[in-house]
Image 1 (tube, rainbow, N blue to C red):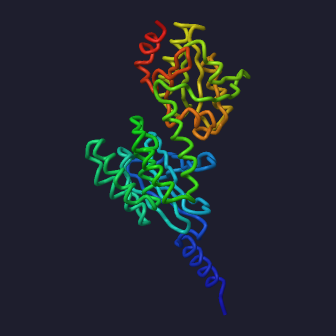
Image 2: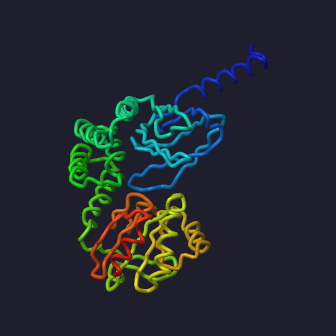
Length: 337
């Protein structure tokens, strides 16, 4: 006959075993340990077909644990407090373990599954090489592994969001991924987002778009014709966006109505965006629908990062793209001459 003490012991044993078990077949578990980072938060999101916002993960005493329900294999992005990030292959029923140091969050070790371990090996092997050599190696890796989720991850890391966008190589690799992974939910949105970048290159007409700004005005490529225009991409969570917006405000004071300015926010919270517009006294039209990089305007204009911008002449043709904040005033002034 079981005593009360025996029952309590069995209950505790069952609890320990349950805790020690891995996730069920419909979830992925991500655990981690960071040196020199006792208490902090970071974000996890899936940049897939339907962006569902950020999950906040708490780091306590240098450790964290996170679980997410999955319908299939996904690519998850971990965005750290210093805005560096790690992309991982998340597969249902698996556990991923991440280790790193707060001083170098861009170089963490990811283990637990074959795909993530192959990615870690590639990153560590190439971390000290020149950027051009790493991109060449990444391109070859994607070609050799186009049917695998880790091939997709390296494409996302080195070709889908780089500022020095190599359009021919990127589109070649994208076509290969579409061929090898036709059912992957992320490929279609990637294709829709990246191809407009070619159409928005220098000397091309600004792509057609139309949206209602927070102030109620309708902004479109047609309304921007007739005068030089500057389209600015920013977000509350981007510290560099503050510097860009300060330069834009100076341009507005310098040129007034001679220069049309439109801001496009990549924020997921419309109220937060509206609050920033009011507190910073941004009087030019600001577009924000809470969809971030999945916004129809962002996709039409090929927005891949913030801060960014497109400078357009009076005829509606792109003059320059993604001008650094420090050079913005001189480039705009030259156009206005």
